[in-house]
Image (cartoon, rainbow, N blue to C red; front, top):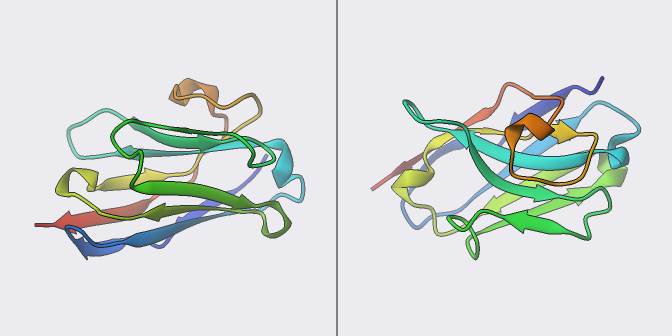
Length: 123
């Protein structure tokens, strides 16, 4: 079991930037594939990006490619999401689930979830 806490959300104007953090409680953080998902009101949970255990492989949704960057620091048990050129459609609650398997876009692959952090983009 790993506890996950997302932070860094807030209100940003369109075109602005924000960096989200996800802190994990477990010493063996490096054994988990990590991802970012988001969910807007009235919409289904949406894949954003995933990163492999070592950080050597990433997989981005087309909607955020070129704007968002995922990274991880296993020594700090933390994963980050740098979000640039934000759009109104990026508004959502952002989650950073952990998976015991390989990276993927299906939320069913992920075993552990936090409470999320709200990102609101105004235009």
